[in-house]
Amino acid sequence: MAIDPVCKMNVEPEKATAKAEHAGQVYYFCSDTCHKTFTADPEKYTSGTAPADHSCCGGHK
Image (cartoon, rainbow, N blue to C red; front, side, top):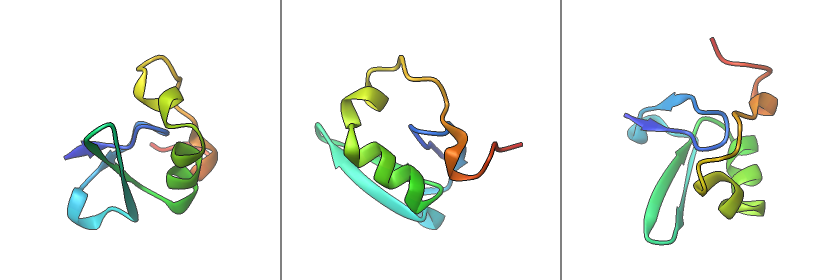
């Protein structure tokens, strides 16, 4: 199980909507929105300080 770095949702890598590599690490995403948000500013989401951004879905349960 992986964690979407944007919304912090658990994502199964084999079912992820998208993936991206940054600084030698692969990240998996629950939606295209999270993927686009991440690729626009990956440092923001890899620093560990960004709060969960639920704009991809309005909030996960």
